[in-house]
Structure formats: C-alpha cells, structure tokens
Length: 151
Image 1 (spheres, rainbow, N blue to C red):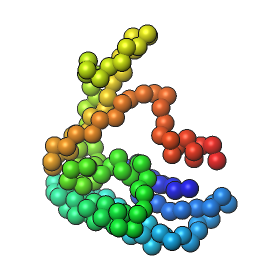
Image 2 (image 1 turned 180 degrees about the vertical axis):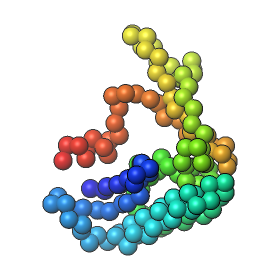
Image 3 (image 1 turned 90 degrees about the horizontal axis):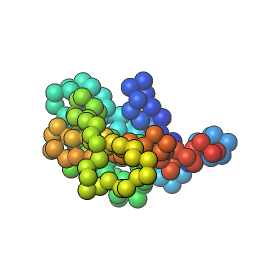
C-alpha cells in the first residue's frame, strides 16, 4: 500500500510502501520514492518561503515528474492533484492557485431525477492559467482512499 501523510497545512508530503503489519519494506523503488518525497517537501518549503514567486516550485515539479517516469513510479492521487499539469508548479490555494466553486455547465449536466444542482471546484493556476476541475459530490471518495479504509 502507498500512503501519503499530511502536515499541519493539509498538504501531503510523505510517500512510502508498507507491508500488512505496518512496517516499511525495502522495495526496489524505495530510493526513488525518497527522492520524490524530498522534492515534494522542498517545493512546499520553497513556496512557503517565497510565496510571490511560485516559479521556483516548477523546477521541483518537473524533476518529480521526470524521475517518476524514468523509474516507472506511480504518484499518490493526493500528490498528483497538487501539481499543475501545465507548468508543474505546486498548487496551494491562495498562493499559486485560485479556487472557485461553480455550477456544472449545461453541456456537462446529466439529467437527474432529483434535480440536485451539483457543483464543480475549479482550480486555476496563477502561473500558466491551466484549469483543473473536480466534481463536488458529498458521497464520493477516491478509489485509493476506499482501499485504505477497508484494510
């Protein structure tokens, strides 16, 4: 299982592989995960130290993506959601991304019998204006989170 812990601010920062007893295992990609962990933590520190210059974290994000591809490592979903697809900058609301909640556009709506108005959360990168959209569904949880709850 892969775990992503969070610091006080809610940003995930740790990725490792654990066995069923909860002890860390020595996997073939553990060195790669340590490198990704360091780069992610460094990008958080850099963005907190210099919040008016998010371009610094873009370098760490690009390195994380390239290392993950070269070593064929899969990033945790919570980590993937905090990296911009366009410029690879770390996305922290208020510092490097604008967050808005909007109703789902008419072209994307499904016909619902209850008439519930679902909404989307839109993250717009302040650096490259790339947009990420997440559907706000109160009963939804990620597949990876469902597996963690059942074990």
